Length: 259
Image: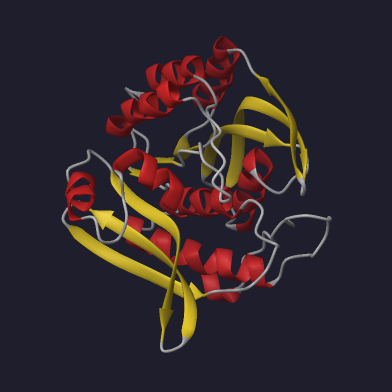
């Protein structure tokens, strides 16, 4: 069985963060390990408190996993502070393991989760990861990205890692679609699924990046992993359990569509 590691924050409501990552890893028949960066008190209606894990303890969690398991891929999620960003960078920089980085710092609602100096510091991880998975707000903050900004697209094409930008909404033939755009240096590939009007979308970004991680561990190419993960999220929203009083969680189950 392939082993994968997630370095991310905890969601006490179980829909996002470490909890969503581990559920996603299991859905793809991989064994998930974890290194916690922050603890959150939250539910489907919002976050009420965040407790940072000490950077040295974050590092120790990572090292203990790596010394005992043959880890096939790593997912990095919420890092929260400059100190944690720095310690994670130092810990991963010499690893020869595929790494997926979800630079969690702006929510789907547009709320900023990091200070500006820490956002800039996130870019120091780019040389050590294979792909980053920002949402539209994060891509705007990192690269001034929008689909018409040729200068930003040129900047993305020169990055030391690949990029997939999530959560754009486009209309084709009077129907709305969710669009993710994959930048592989100068090449660009677009992935679509039908847009589902729902409030059950908590943890979709975390689950998408962890699905990519699991599929890379299973030997899929980046393009294959993104395609499978896009369909996984579509099915997960479609089959959401519809629980909670706010933005509900998705269903972390792999159907035949994701094989």
